[in-house]
Length: 107
Length: 121
Image (cartoon, rainbow over all chains, first blue to last red; front, side, top):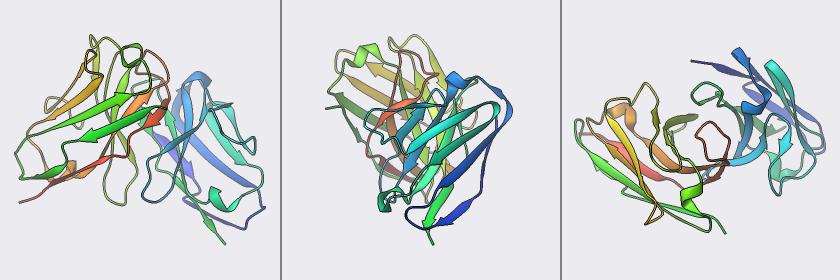
C-alpha cells in the first residue's frame, strides 16, 4: 500500500500569505494519479486539483499543484479567509489512499 | 447539478449489519465509477470501497474486505454499501463519492454530505 505523508501537520498563516503544502509518497506515483482536496468543518471534501496539477471546475487560480514521483506540492498563492481548512492529498495509482491532512489555520 | 444523497444512518451494535444507500442525480450514473469514503470522528479520510461503472469490478480497503459489499443499480441510479460484522472502529461518517472517470482509480469530483454510522453497545 502506498502511504502518503503530508507536512506540516498544521500551517499557521495570515490572509494574503502564501501557503505551501507537501505530500510525500512511500513509492513513486504517476502524476496522473494524484489529487488534492479541501475540507471545511462539517462539510464534505471538495476536489481542488487532479492529475497533480489540473484545477477542478470552479477552483480559483490561486490554487496550484505540482510534483512528480514521490514529492507533490499544493500552493495557495494568497490566502483568502475562505481558504482556512484542512487539505488532503490522495493517490489512486495503487488502490486509493489519502494523506493524513494539513490544517491551514489563521495565525 | 450533481447530487448524491446518502441514507441508512444509524446506531448498530458490534457484530451487527447496516445497509447504506446513495441516490445519485444530475449526471449519467452508469457512466462513472463510484466509491465510499469514510471519516472517523476527528480523523482523516479513508477510502473504503469502489465499483466500476457497470458493477463488474469491485475494490475494497483491507480494513473492510470480507465484511463490506459494494453494489449498484444503474436503473435506479443508486449505490449501496452492505456492512456486516460491524466493529467499533467502523464508526464514521460515510460519504458516497463519484469518480471523475469510468474507472475507480481516478480523482473524486463529487461527494455526498455523508451519513453517520455509529457502532456501539
